[in-house]
Length: 262
Image (cartoon, rainbow, N blue to C red):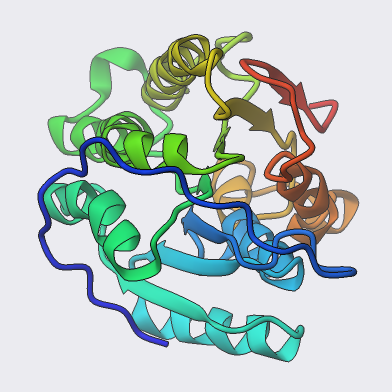
């Protein structure tokens, strides 16, 4: 199902969203999940996994065609389909700001946020990073994360089991030459998410980060063009572990979960 998110004032004083009835084999039945970067790679694999688990997925990515393919894939996997939001996170500030209140207005709840969208930028010396590359990388990796937190926070807190997961990278802990823009923006995102986790600790909201490690994605191929992708895990291999962080029974908070060894 295609969805258009209209501009809506931020929700205030939201009543709690009731816990949906559990279904056998569908632990997320009745819950609503927002997934960015959902048309390909890890984001698509996580969206598919969440759909299989019963969640209604609100999918964000740049391309309408890719999102429509994901809608079909979720239905083929036994899910109920998805709401599609095709726009560029780096250029869609107002659309990001509208997501939380509009999803709440439409569905009465938002239970899960997975920020899987990411921008590699250009691997280049720090002194050679262009303003255009910097703004694109900051826009997707950091500014979009801040805006998503801002718009989704009150709605996720209204859930009986709000869950947020941000994809991070080993480049935060292990800086590497030429990866300055990517590493710096992911470090900022990681710090912001961990701060949010501390602030949410007294609520039912749980916020974590997942580092998938080396996975055979288009971004990985751009960064390591000589690498044999057949030697790497596929997005579908790491998606279940990321989706598991979205389950109501997952009580970890403020952690960086490493899923790979490089």
